[in-house]
Image (cartoon, rainbow, N blue to C red; front, side, top):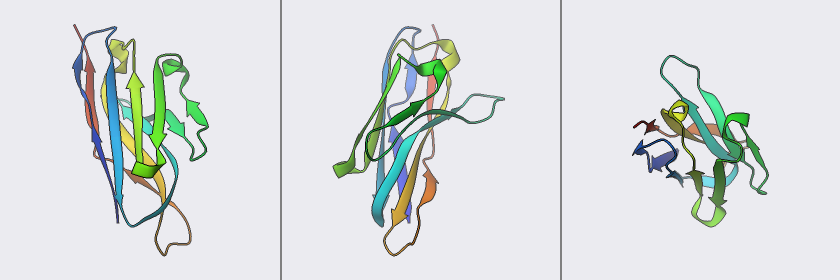
Length: 121
């Protein structure tokens, strides 16, 4: 019913920048929270940053001051600007959205397929 498609991952040197994008499509009535999680090899998936429909954010301490989230409600899209990247930021990044679909009484969480971010010299 809802698809999330990410783009923008890749290989970057330490200190570099990347911008991830995620667009939602399908039977969308309203999107509540949107954001990004990541999962490094051998580790659990963890929150990177979330943004509410009103623009409030909740981000992990490890990315404060380096990563910035934004969203375009008209396009059902969310973006993650990642600056000053470190090797420990290497992970698969997943887009996440809580979506209320047309005809549904409540919202459900949906995941994108993931995009690889590798920070290495």
